[in-house]
Image 1 (cartoon, rainbow, N blue to C red):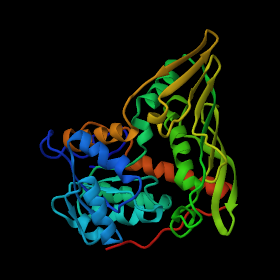
Image 2 (image 1 turned 180 degrees about the horizontal axis):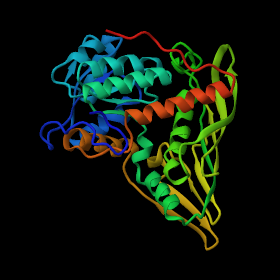
Image 3 (image 1 turned 135 degrees about the horizontal axis):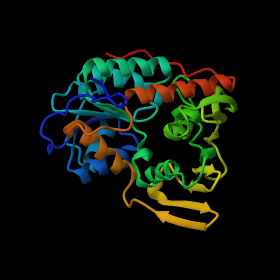
Image 4 (image 1 turned 30 degrees about the vertical axis):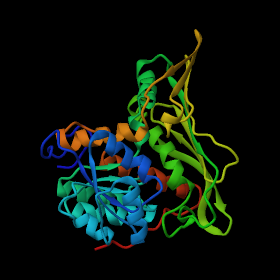
Length: 351
């Protein structure tokens, strides 16, 4: 049985104390922080890695203590020693290789977004349900105590009735040849950055009457990259009456990674919600004054892998699963359509 909200999910696998045996697809820049260091800290094993360039995979393995190098992604997915496949490939390859890993009976921790569009995300969800594996999209920010505390504040009523939520993820851009500027590889600012903003808004849905819907959106195309968004701003509303804005920019002059909840009795801001370990403050302003709280000394990725391992080994419920990935992807597609851009195309399945 796959993870569903309120459901039991797949049964725990093996010895609760046994380390996860992780297979790594690609030698991505994010991998050392996102999986290698948290795995080492948690006593888990990175048993094998593959990359398009075998020499690069060998260098990565030597530098980061990966046990073996495979000749291909397919070899990693099929490896009998691998329990969990971690997928940090370019966006367009998330869906195809998530499906391949699930078909091989592996649990999957994938970088966001889980697929190129809602249709592909639904295929991944359905495949995970049939296979009975744990599948999770890597919205690591969600597990950090700072962001948990923000949701507690909303639930407690200290801020009063929530009127508006603002989520931003704006950073300087990657180089002109970066795959995140490729339409064919499911690129764009919303896919790479704005997905965090939309997901953070969705995580407030239980307190705001239900899931948000897109009211309007605007986007600017990357020069020379038709239909690829350099920036996108979206206006949303919740069934309970609160409004929201999500703003992302992948070639910004500066940085803004803030999440602010404004209510009738106060306001709370997380200055860096996607990477809360870089700034673990939450700033709360009420009629009684302003105070600052600090929560969580480890990286968002450490908290995430702990939760994922507890799910796989002990059956501890996760706050998100494959259904959640579909809902977020549907909201991304809606934003693109509202901004006059198409949802991202998908690549062919592999294997």
